Length: 314
Image (cartoon, rainbow, N blue to C red; front, top):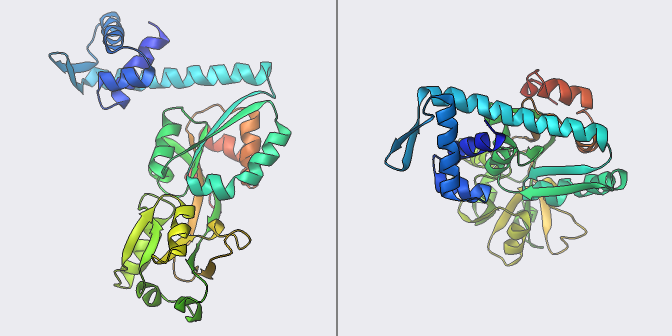
């Protein structure tokens, strides 16, 4: 039995039982994946996958148990490698963070600069995606941890910890009628076309919930995954924008004005997501604490290794 066989086996399951997709993901050939999986099944004396001809159609009962154990072995193999690196190369290595555009663009730059100054030999990579993609990258071991507002807490395999709270602003061009609306109301916003986040992003569900509770159906003319794109279309006069407060910088966004909307929408919480049982390098703990000072190494470590992270609140 080889780790490579376990990787192939688990990747087929992750790719919706598609051997070709698993081969693409692993940068190898489809026949190679099929052969490795067959050899493992023969060694175990059971069939992990159900097949119809050459096509994988399902997972057998024993196969579900095998996949759970295989995933656990792969996680521990990765942990073992990280543990060795921690003691042999304490100040060098790689740190991969999965996060959304808003976090990468507005929340992380100062932390990244500080971290790079402290750990110049650590290769830092930021993988951007929507919250679901962020969660899945962490679960697959493609990122050490994830930072996002939506989705993370809905994955049972992830330990999630709150980083900070935030709310929204409405962005408009100068001399826009909403600048005279005091206090700002949802009804007043709904009188104008709205440009905001795609549903999968940055607290969009909280925005929709606020309008729905008032029985208001805003005219959302454009959605985007990027706050900068939203602001660009507001500048073009396509509508009023609803963005995260952190995404508006008066010094850079001089052609726009921001109106506080925190009284209209529920507060959102940006969370840290880590796969339960993961071994984190010391510098990963330091990055987390730089980003969210209340998340000390002890707090994060206890959560990852057992305590339920979601129970810790701001």
